[in-house]
Structure formats: C-alpha cells, structure tokens
Amino acid sequence: MPATVEVRFKGNRKDYFLWPREDEPLRLWDSVIVPAERGLDFGRVSATGEAATKKCNSCSGCALGEVKIPERSVVRRATREDIQTANELRRSEDDTRRSVVERVRSRGLDMKVSDAEWQWDRKKLTVYFTAEKRVDFRDLVRDLASTLHTRIELRQIGARDEAARLSGVGRCGKEFCCSSWLTSLGPVSLALAKDQHLSLNPAQISGGCGRLLCCLKYEHEFYVKARKRFPKEGKAVRTSRGAEKVIAVDIFRERVSLRSDELGPRVLTLAELREEMTEGDPAVTRVADGGTDREGGDRLSDGEPPSQERAEAEEVVEGGAGGETKRRRRRRRRKKGPPG
Image (cartoon, rainbow, N blue to C red; front, side, top):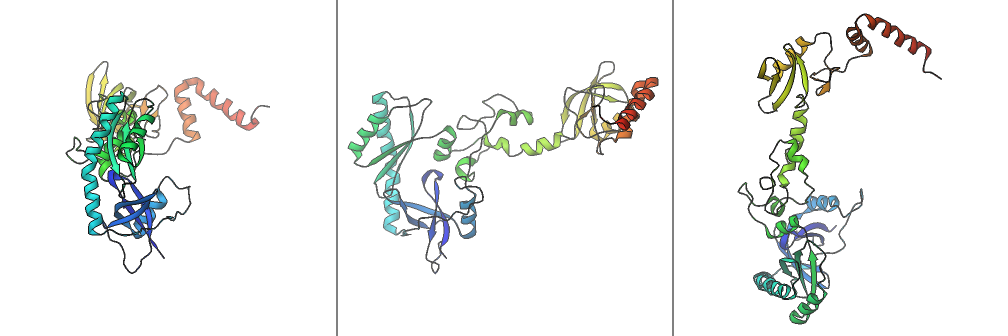
C-alpha cells in the first residue's frame, strides 16, 4: 500500500502526497519532485508513515471523521541537478520581489509585497502581499506576466502568515513559533492577557507581526484552573476579623492580600484563609471555591455544596425567630405540590 508523506515548501507551506515505492521508503528531509498546478514543484519530506497520515487526517480541510487519502503521488526523488535548480530559484527570488515592489510603487498601490516564490519549473510565480483594504492589481498582473513570461498569482495574507513566511527572532531569543513548529495559527484575544494579569500595553504583549503573542495561549488553562481555588479580587469575604476585601491573589505563592476598613491590610496563605473563613462564620457550611455567600462575599471550600437540610438550617440562622415559620411554610409547599 502506498505510504503517505508530508512535503514542505518555502514559507512553511505543506501538502500531502503518496509514495508508491515501498521497497525504497523516503526519509525525513529527502528532496522530492511533486506535482503542482500546471507543472512540477520542489519540496522536502517532513513526515512519513503514520505521523504523516495522522497529520493529513487532522487538518481542517477535511470533513469531521472523514479519512483522507492524498490523490497525488510523488513524481520522483530529486537529483543533484534538481536541488541546484531549486537553490538558484531561491537566490533569484529576492531580485524578483524587488522588481515587483518597484512596479507597485510606480502604480501607487496601497499594498506591501512580503515575498515572492517561484514554482520549480518556473511556470508560475506567486507573490504574497499584505494590505489594509481591497487592492485592484489587475494591471500589475498583466505587466508582470508580459515581463516575466509566466503565470502570475498575487495572494493576500495576514500579518501572522507574513511572520510565518519571513520568520524572525522573538523577544524570548528563539525563532518565531509560527515559522518553526506551530502548524496552525489560532486566534489570540486580549482576554488571555487579562486572565494572566499581564500588562495590557500592546507594545509589551505583541510579537514581531504586530499582533498579540501566540504564546499567551500556552499557559492560559493553568491560570484559569489555579484561580478557581482563590476568592475573586474585589470581593468581600468574612473571616475571624470580620468582613475583609480581597485586594490581590498570588497563585504561585498561594497568598491572598486582604484589607479591612478597621484593621487595615494583611497577607495570608490560602490555607490560613480557609481556616479563618470557617472560624468567622461557623454556622454556614463552606461551598465550592469561588462561591458567594448570603452577604455578597466569597467563600472557599474543598467539599460538596450544602444539602437541603443544611440550606434550611442556614435560613433559620439568618431569619432568627421567624426562621422556624419560614421552614414550616416551605414544608407545607412541598407536601401540597406546585401551585396549579
């Protein structure tokens, strides 16, 4: 049975093909010649066997649950002459891009030419650009086609895709994730930075592409789970010292900063806060983390929510002498059933 292989091209572009020769399996980073639109293209193998099949079936282009089998096969392994031709094309692409940029400026088009990519057989030239608005480049395409004598394709990409194609070094000192190992670029919202209590200054949380850092998503789930164990900031909690307001929480040191109108601020560990909240309101059973008590404050717990009997007991404590009357009314309503 032919094996599935993943072939990568310039700019992190990839596609999947079949390799029919089982007696001569392809290895990683082998150079191959593959079929392309109206011709042939040059690429390198980045995955083979089960890994390539799994990647092929998990891509967003397939229907959910559909098993995809590539329709095209690798033409052959690339020879030394093929590799030399591909290298010469890559060296000439910078001059081609500068030529396109000059024609764009002469026509006054509001677009930024990011990259140019030749197909291996020179039957097609793809020009990648970014633009804020819709651009009419029909005259530009005709001019390039008559000058270069090949098929011209202008493809508009976003800022993240441009960074993935051109690559670069991030503020962490490593190559951009989008151009090295990150295969899909998902949306990144400002809410991720808020949940992690990061600075909302765009200059500090933006990458080389000018958009929010992709790495904001890596630890977001950890922050969300960790903060569920703490009371919400700005809420009031009842401790042994009375009502106190939560000023800040430190999820790494497990500390909570509180402030009382009468006694001032203080810092407690999460374990100490749990004990004091129990001592401050012993008649009330603690509920799930992040819950809200009857006075609008937060209450911590690692147990289960109170049962119906406990809820009735709370109502008795709250209602005082009239609590017994409320409980009898509730029991009568349960016996009679819902009205109507």
